Image 1 (tube, rainbow, N blue to C red):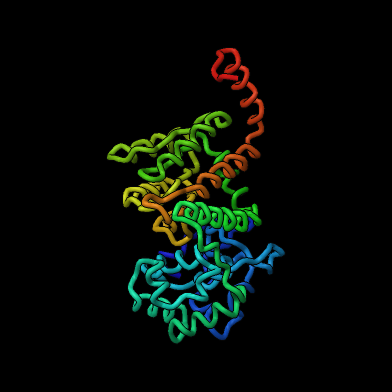
Image 2: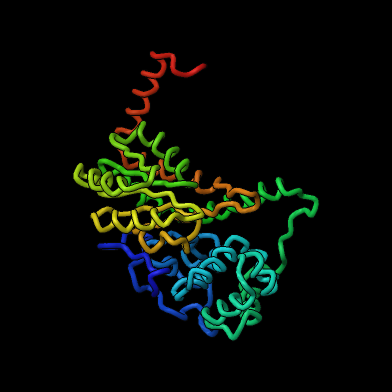
Length: 334
């Protein structure tokens, strides 16, 4: 498995988190059992992907596509194609190679090479395979939607995919345990992801005794990680959204070298931060407007907060204390 797709966990794998080496190249190509027949181990080490019907969890086109891609050595361009296909899982079996190339923002020959990398003779063979494992009819939205409505509809689809991901709660629960146990808890998010990190840190500080927000890059960010480690930190939470700053990848690599377990909320399991994360939870962003929308990553952050609260025995007491102080200060308008 390549560095791009292998994340791996240091130490024993927890429930629902497969160990490294559970899938190899070509395991879901033509002539095999195909996507949708594998268990949780097909999502790749440390990646929380939609699980399939083999686990008793509802299946989906996105889950089957995710299973098809896992275990293959993908280039950055190919990861971009894979990510675009997962986002439009219901439509992909009906797209030509030219249309898929336009969707992913790559060249048509790149789509052909991508199909070959998955073990198919070419894109027609890949599309034929997709039609066999995807819904028989294309789902089309109302043609009358304007661009603003289309952006909302795309985000609704992203939230539906997130709901499918959360059908298996174990990865999020494991992430909650890691975050709750880290004292202090550094929360990283730069550039486009800074607001996600800030929102999480704002609420987390009401229940966690020591949350440290890292939302500004620069030469001091490694110093702040060192300080957190010296203070006893065991995990770091990162929000990583496109376009992915190189500094985030470098910072996560440094955090892991310092001994921190890295939990990452990213826009895709194929994001550049995957290789420097111990547990990656994907939540797609919307790309229909001039600037990306991030409803799903924000909601996943709130879900992580809930999971963390479940592992903080005094979380409810802290919330009640905050409410009492806020009322005494007249902090909020009733």
